[in-house]
Image 1 (cartoon, rainbow, N blue to C red):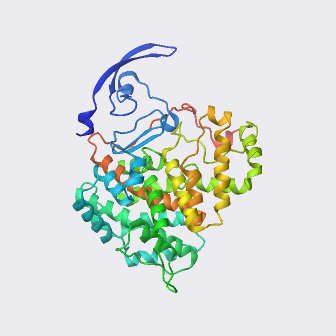
Image 2: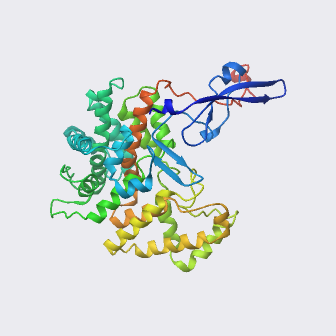
Length: 440
């Protein structure tokens, strides 16, 4: 059943008071299938002359969506109704990508067709490879990703018409398929190593690991434990409702920009340290703490309002309870570190002890500051051999599935309009212009 058939509508009244007048308005209440209902304020300015004021849009629903649902109070994350724990345990990343895009889990035949479509588009135009030479070798991989993904629109002219469902579909397949290739090439370029072409008989994560870490001088042996762990990381990062980068993709798409430009905009937003760089901050914090016997000192610092130190990887803007993705990654971290016998094991043991001590501390318990997905992901990726500069690139790679799903949903939405947030103006009113020679 479509989301509009599931959702209903009611009415509610609101009383507005200011110094000059009092108004009572009847506003529609749009029913949600999960989570809070929403007050429809689209007529508020027309009927009353007011805007709503909501910095950060934390209380504003900007769209209808049937893709992802989060209940932050209960620690629930659902994709098309399936819990993230269930998907991480039973699916792989491409199956989750299919679910996000099309709304249902694929049949065997549908999955075979989907896999073939993805395999068809894993390579990039050979001319695009030369595009990398325009970057400095020490360029940040995210800077390369923003430029190269945006440049795809200069190479694939047959998938730029957003009003053509077939072209939107091809663009979506291309973005999901080519992102691992583009990301691995960004890494290879910064290392001065030759690019490695994709092998379509390999799985999605396995193929990416080969493009990242194989070299012509020796055979590459894939490790199923690492491939599975990376695939799980991709699943856990595939979509997360209307976060900053997803909202950026939707806002760019509302202007009818081409899909490659929209995804490049999402990558740029994700690059911000407040969004996609948190797992790097966790690693830096753990290395600063250094040993288990200093954990108490740093917990005390975190409790001190006058100390700028904060425990990174604890708490989440949305989740006010456990981050369900963190529980899944904790298991993956154990598996990867057992497999690698990694020198990162002490760092992971330090993280576990920090987690234990923090969760026994009343300060963190009262504030529900539980470990989030970033607390473990950085340790796993570092143990697998990824440099810190690639952490956010991997986030972008995985989130592409969610971005293209959200973008397709937005384009198909009947009420979709170009994004145009309002403001509360607090500057000067009309002023007289003063000639330069008379300005005091």
